[in-house]
Image 1: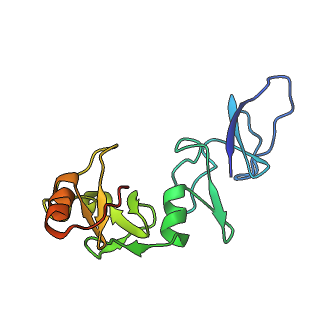
Image 2: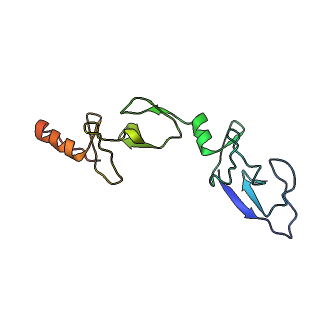
Image 3: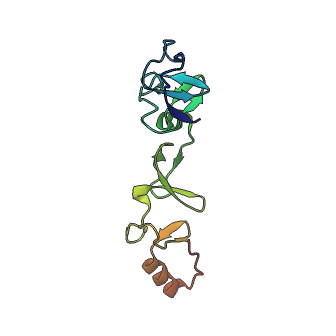
Length: 149
């Protein structure tokens, strides 16, 4: 859901805050879930962060108003890293190659441990991530067909 920050027009009747039920007399107010809020009243039910400060999105489920991180922590899908097999929390950034998911730190050549930068070529062979050098060396030895990603 989206959060809008609006400036209060001085000649308008003050709106009631959905969080505390008091009139909003501040210079700015937030509009979210078709209701109006003081900036201090629109908070994540778990971590109490002010949702107007952490971005323009909020999440609702089970009558809770949540920030992205807590929503994913509570309701997101977790999985395991294809390289280290450890759990990947739902809120963590990941890298993907076909159906495999990796921690950012684990997304490296599984032979020489070279980390990849944005735009680098990597290869997926027998569910292993390989850098171009290791992949081409394998081609010379095994004669397997390339799968550039």
